[in-house]
Every structure is written in C-alpha cells, then in structure tokens.
Image (cartoon, rainbow, N blue to C red; front, side, top):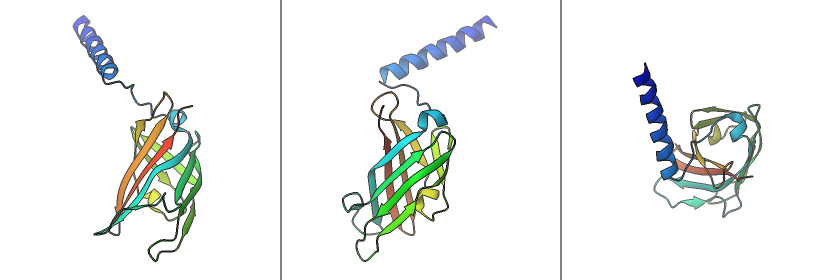
Length: 150
C-alpha cells in the first residue's frame, strides 16, 4: 500500500512540475470560476468557398453573462452585410460545463445552441476564454469569448 501511495504522490508532484514548467495552472471549470461577463474577441464567419468576414469589424458583437446559477443573459448582433439583413438575438437561457466544454441552451435560434466551447485560461488568474468553431449550412463560424481577469 505504501508503494501505491508513493507512486500517486510522485505522479502528483510530476504533474505540478509539468504545469509549472508550461507556465500554466490547471484550468478550473466550476460554474463559480466560469461565471462572469464575456465579450467576443473573435467573431468571424466564412461561407463555403468565400472569404472570411470579421463580424466585429462590421459592428457585430456577442456579449453574454454567465451567472453562477447556470443562467445567461446578453445580446448577439450581426450587422447587415452581403445582402443579409442585420440580426439580433437575446442570449437569455442557460449554460452548462462538463470538463473543459461549455454548452449554451437558449430559446433564440442561433448557432450558439449548437456550438461547443472549449475553456482556456486568459491572462491572469481568473481570466477565461471560451473558444468555439462550428459549421452550419456550409458556413464556418468562429467565436472566442473572453472574460478578463479581475
């Protein structure tokens, strides 16, 4: 039994050293650690066979608040472009986390319901990013939501 305990302690020590050497901490993905105000740092669409459109440069945005009780509020906006009208949707709904994956469930019919976001650390101890990449109807949608460190 002592050898198993030593092996586990050695593995824990090696893991801590590895994380420190890589310059990172383990990503905490509890609702409390992820809750906060997020804004899209990247919001881009690429129709099949066409150029990527930077939705932010056109005035589009995604602002979403993840509450620690699993609910969300906020707004998604795309500007009118290339013959498509402007689009607005409420980000009210719910969110859930499993491991390092975050999913949204909202009454609004948007790609946010289908996109799986991956959690990563942003600058600072409490900063987080949620990165999603999803293709729907031949259009690739890339989003990076950032919660600044506090």
